Image (cartoon, rainbow over all chains, first blue to last red; front, side):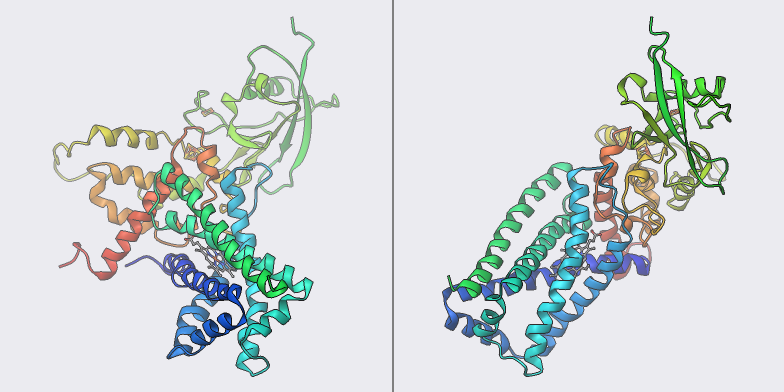
Length: 206
Length: 254
Ligand code: HEM
Ligand code: SF4
Ligand code: FES
């Protein structure tokens, strides 16, 4: 036997966080970053993604199903923890709680974001172009909603990458785990920059 | 002389497993080099609370009095630790004593750590050497390995790491870091290694290894300095390999 259902679910949850969801996140932020080269560049990149062959298969198996599983199981994991920061204020304990809080924040953000972009486009209520995002992000409330959502997601992924390396026994020694902490901080800063820079472009045209 | 110096203790008490807890305050005459246990013994000698009322003596567990049995563990000023090595001079006053919340309470500060011993049985934390005939000496162990395995063997099943873990609580069945680390200990032994995959299988479920969320409070809290998170990461690696072996076929079956 390869472990019980609880074991397999948890392994799957961990794996999906990086492959494919994490990879998709980086791809998504990168394609959006084309916006910094102007509306035309963004539209070309977005339309290229939109015109990929067997797009619905890719969307279903690389994005929606993995994300749905990771999110639902993630909420369950998040609510089985009991925070004890007051007596154990260690760095990793803070990261543990942030991982759970950002998971929930990310879920709310993604649900809203998918609703007003992918689902709206799917129903024909909106068109995928630069103006769609510009319209959303020039409203100050939504600009800040997106800033928080993006940073929450990038934190969750970066810190998740750290725990992924532990969960699969790649970083075993305390030293390797410490180095991975620094790597995850660099990843966090880098992809947060990419994400927030794109938001500023849409909101302020700079 | 420090004859009239007093120490104050606030103790969370509970008369029996089913009753609700309450707090009681005590003033205890200070003596030099007191530890929490000698202060509790003072209450036992003269069970009168800070209001001057006679009360029942506070109950607690102890054994070795030298931090090797784990029986006297309790939460002292918010930190789970052994009361026998908690020196009064090093503690902030008033000293707050509480039973560890992870375990069912027997009475006052004494808890029932049965779940930890059950977990040790579940994960087969032993080396089967009994046979119907003398099996002879086992294989030798490399000294470099013996050194780190010895560190793992220091666990006294005190329960502090479970108390510190945010994933060990009433909403989860996670067995906690201590029994997991024991799997690594017995798997590292040259004879114990013969049952390695059997032992790994016992922790490959929702309550076992996967209960860990990497908060790493355990390694910060263990009084024996056991590298619990290293053990957990090593087991994460071992069980990943074990999953592949058992799913795609292994050397166990022909
Ligand atoms: C963009 C979307 C997301 C990405 C890229 C992502 C990525 C990751 C990664 C890489 C991990 C580490 C896995 C491991 O520890 O082995 C993780 C863990 C986790 N994720 Fe997500 N995640 C996303 C969305 C969510 C959502 C919506 C939730 C819902 C609450 C969530 C809840 C969790 C929880 C609770 C953990 C901790 C698991 C643990 O440490 O035991 N995640 N995530
Ligand atoms: S691992 Fe450390 S904290 Fe946990 S039970 Fe053993 S001795 Fe106590
Ligand atoms: S009495 Fe044994 S550890 Fe304290």
